[in-house]
Amino acid sequence: MSRYGVLGQPFDQAQWHPYAPNLQEDRTPWSCATAAGESLMDLHESEDLVRFRAEAVAWLDAHAPRPGSAGDFTVGRERPFVDGCRRWQATLSEAGWAGVAWPVDFGGQGRSALFELVFRREQARYGVSTAAFDVGIGMVGPTLMVHGTDAQKASHLPALLRGEEVWCQMFSEPGAGSDLAGLSTAARRRPGGWTINGQKVWTSYARFADFAILLARSDAARPKHHGLTCFLVDMRTPGIEIRPIPQMNGAAEFNQVFLTDVEIPDDAVLGEVDGGWAVANTMLGSERGLVGEEWPGVAELCQIARARGRATDPLVRQGIAGTFVREQILHYLDLRIQSRLGNGEPVGALASVFNLFFADHLRRSGNVAASLLGPGMLTAPSQIGLAGRWQFHLLTAPSVRIASGTDEIQRNILGERALGLPREPRPEPGSSDPSLRPAPARSQA
Image (cartoon, rainbow, N blue to C red; front, side):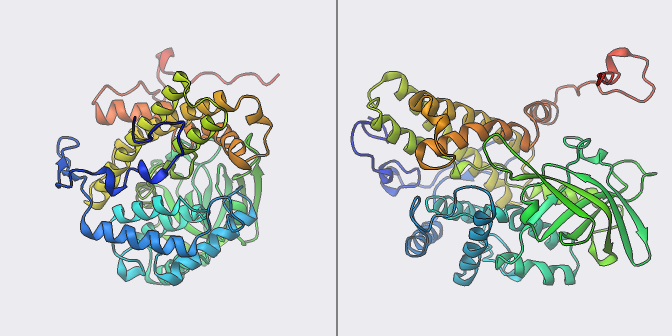
């Protein structure tokens, strides 16, 4: 008997929900030291947080559709999904639930990042989403607050919270992904503004975005980290061509963006000219990492196991138990990240720990579902019903090992920055050591 009870019995999610008060028999506040030099993390919910959660759940119950109901718009990542995100974000704004962790001066509630996490987790239990605003509200907004001019803040921050602007991030390039500072998209001055030429790739929601934050090389003569500038780009500007990248999960969330003589005004510069690396670091530092509350998990696995008559199968139970343990580990890793953010501390290498573990969790939980559903999982309509959702999950999981930096990059960050191991050998210009030279290009013949 676990928090899940007996798998063969009716499943009551409230009985095992990690936040459920009835599970916290000892309500004595306690804290744990998470790492040397890191602030204590209080794992006891304050009265304010308990009250906030109750108010959020009551409001969501009254206004958000249930998963699978007629109002559920979370299937797919095409125009209907983005339009649904816009409507829901507008609803949040009108009701005062937008920008939970944004400062009051910028239209938010002024609460800590932990309150935002709680609201996101509760919201994920309904047939709604704000994923189309992850870049805009989660990353662009905080970056504008730090580096934007008063005019830029006034133009974009309120519109973001109202759901009027979807943003995309144009950083990565075919030759500059993990080594972002090596990008080659060029920004050249012209009277009254700039002309942009280059190519970006893996740009989420570019087809539906109103604006983009673009990182380009403004001075090729300077060291690569010092000749970059950030720009705010209207995606309707002539010279922007967007080509979707079909994925094996049936979606086309990612895009290639080609910029040909794109002219933007001087007031589109974000931060200092040639100071774009600092702006980019602020933006990437605002990224919360991949949080798995919108993915199917233990509850869905239990439902499938019972439906297939395998709820008492020891191997199935072991797989579901492993999924539960990993979900709890991710929950507490996420709390550590939010605690650091709330204390004004850098997330640092903890983000790499989270991303590595999360990617592995998706793979393992998808394999458990595949063992239960069998071949029918791959023939189901994408994202329709449990089989379709798990199919989408399984086919999407490999991309997670790349999206926030490959597993190899994440492990290098942990080894070099967290564990203090020697840096990997890197080729120097003119190096005579063959082992440090770049591999020769393969013949295309």
